[in-house]
Amino acid sequence: MATASAHHAVITELIAAQVKTLSFLTYVLRSYQDRMLPHQETLAHCVVQMLRRCPSSSVSSRKELLVATRHILATDFRKGFFGSIDVLLDENVLIGPDRSGHDSVRPLAYSTLADLIHHVRSDLSIVQLSKVTHIFAR
Image (cartoon, rainbow, N blue to C red; front, side):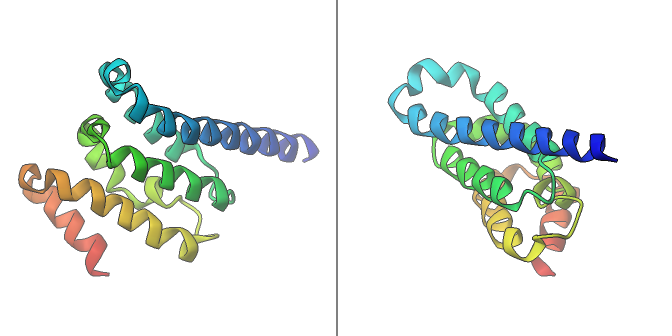
């Protein structure tokens, strides 16, 4: 049992460090946009993977990750996320599978999703529009 909790603590610390690095990277993106733009899909993929792996119990890291994602979505780097719409429409990825901290993360998660949806709304399929409607109508 102690090994499992130690493993969980290490994962939580690793995710927190990755989120801090991403926060710094979002600051650097604006200054070096021309050099970083070819890596927009890779950056988006890494952000989505961090959302998938971020423990639900780590509410502060998930919030910071969502804030960093919003900063990225405010730049041309948002195009890298266009291929991840279906993944981000999964609330288990966006908010986390566990409901701990759900109420504090959900508003930020939904506003981040809304920022992305705003830019791709004309390209969404009927199934995606249905998911968006379902998420925001609840």
